[in-house]
Amino acid sequence: MPGVSSASADDSTKEVEVYFDDTQISIEEIVSGLLESAQYSDTQNYYWTKRVNITAEQAKNLIDSKPGTVVVDVREEDEYCGGHISGSAMFPWNSGVFQTEYNTILPSSGGVLLACRSGNRSVEASDFLGSSSGGNYTKNHMSSVVVYNMVGGMNDWTYDTDTCSSNYNITSPAPGSTLSSTSATFSWDSGAEKYWLWIGTSAESHDLYSANQGTNTSRTVSDLPFSGETLYVRLWSVENGEWLYNDYTYTACSIVAGMLSPTSGSTLDSTTQTFTWNNSGASQYWLWIGTSAGKHDLYSDGQGTNTSATISDLPNNGITLYVRLWSVDNAEWFYNDYTFTAFVSISSMQSPVSGSTLDSTTQTFTWDNSGASQYWLWVGTSAEGHDIYSGDQGTGTSGTVSDLPSSGETLYVR
Image (cartoon, rainbow, N blue to C red; front, side):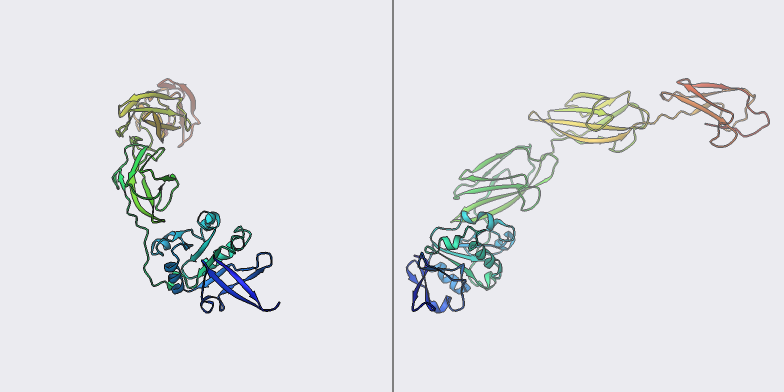
């Protein structure tokens, strides 16, 4: 039975012996300067220690002679996957996984070997197990568990290591393919002890999906992105008690149509505009046009499977128009938003011809009907002036101005 026992010669001297499964471990190897923070329990008649430091060679001998030893690697994932002790479990210290999940892996009896890169993080982990934050794990199991720290860490480990590559692979959808919907069924090889599936928007992430799959060999995941993003999928599998994985990438479906013309952000050239979008394969499209974001006070109508729509009677005052193009897939609606600047109606003078000489002090000015809601006419003796005339013309397309100068001056008309 693991533990640390004592034989007392007198009150001031105690001889410490360390046992593992009733087999005494060499005091010369691990106690001389290596047994840390030993404290005596009068009630249990045992010393307990937060760790026993051992070398990489001693750790290898321990694992080989005691296959039940739980090996916990407290490095981060990239370090762990670069090479780790076969059968070890990854519970990173720096990212806080060990602190929150240690009780899911540590045994109630036997040996626990903590390993990291150089031995520093494993010391922190063993300190944690000996504290109230770690549930006083070491003290509470002092008669049944020995916690070992591999000094020197994996830097000193010269023996075989494993990587994270799994023997179990996703079989469908084909890796690297484009998903056809916002829901996808992922299937994989059978035979592992357990599976876990990650889906994320960046490598090694799982912000979209993360769940234990048990021994199931497929999972349908819904609410995936729909704009052609790269999706990162990791299939974890437990093999011989060890979590391994394979990584895959997919392209999200592009079921949401995108506006082809006019260009988003541009100014429309008329109060009638044809909007054109790509055929994304949606079963229906719907178009909104409004005077504020998310509104459709100017236009709202289904387009069927058409990929264009011509809309009339749009504003002509230069306001911002908000356009939303909806696409439907499996009864689920998705959209893309766009903004445009409304056409600005500017009329041009038709007669008299600009630059000509007027033939009278009374003149009728005529302009084209641009569709503006109102016209105003200025006449002045200087640029941008209207000291001779300024008047509202309503929606009329001509205005007659009298009492114009008669001495050949230049007149400025706006």
